[in-house]
Amino acid sequence: MDLALLQAQTVAPTANRETLLEAFLSAQDVKQSSRDNYRRTLRQFYAWLDRTGRSISSISLADTIAYKEDLLREGKSALTVSSYVTSLRSFYGWLEAHKLYPNIAKGLKLPKRKQQFRKQPLTTEQTREVLNGGEGYSLRDYAILNLLLRTGLRTIEVIRANVEDITYKAGKRVLLVHGKGREERDNFVILTDKAYRPIENYLRSRGKVSPKEPLFTSNSNNSRGERLTTRSISAIAKQSLRAIGLDSREFTAHSFRHTTAVNILRAGGLLEDAQAVLRHSNPATTQIYTATIKEEQRLKTGAEQLLDSLY
Image (cartoon, rainbow, N blue to C red; front, side, top):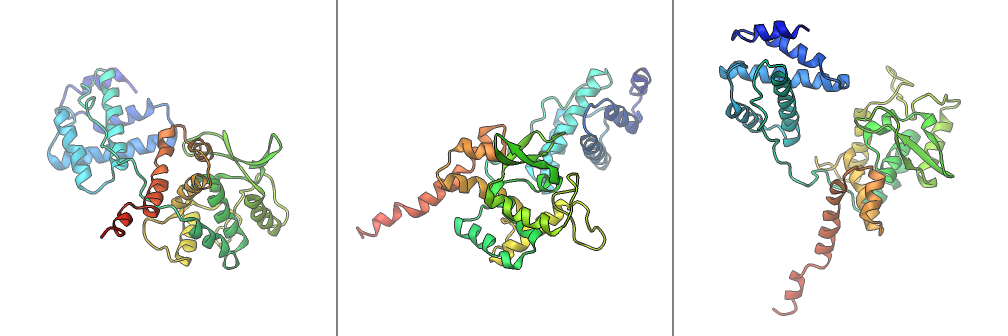
């Protein structure tokens, strides 16, 4: 892209916005998924400019703040709006670096997010109920549910797993993990016998499998033998939750990840133990799970009950 030509174009208020966008995208050393997200969010910003009668060449920080507030008023989550704001800040940073437009988004702040999780963990008894419903599950579905509850894997990590990712480290059986936002399998979870046996039973039912095959495959007619989708894993988890009476929005496949962390703490594990299993880089992320333990303790020994002995 000829930056000199772009600089000349931006002198006029009718500068080609799509040309600017494509030049910005081509200059980003990021994964294609990130580039696609930039394109999607910035085109929505363009649509907002048109809808409100604003121009890319004449807006100010106050306008970008109004854009952020409009996104929040539309009901988008703080996490989603943060993605839009991050794209906008990167775009205007690039525009300024190439002397196209000033970086009016430099002072635009991300919306504040509450330091708590919306998805609820299962109690220990509910966890047992899910696992004890094994007779109603296929070998594959039980192996997946059991794996989620014993390792805290994300759904994307489950579907990315291959048969060959089950290996050993220092004599321990592990599953190598291709994590969210990662380029390779650079982490692992330990597969205890209770975590591994259902997987072993499921793989045996598939007959001869290649190490390169997905660990879990589809059974549907249209995609038999192919890698499952995150939607498939979510549906399997949701069905198991409904079977024990948990059908609210607070209980999803991601609840299983929370359950793993909370159950480690319930069993006497340290916060560092839960952090290692969930592979959080920041301990503050894991810290939120202690709130569940404190709440359970509060409900068990609530001081309000002491008043009943007095009046």
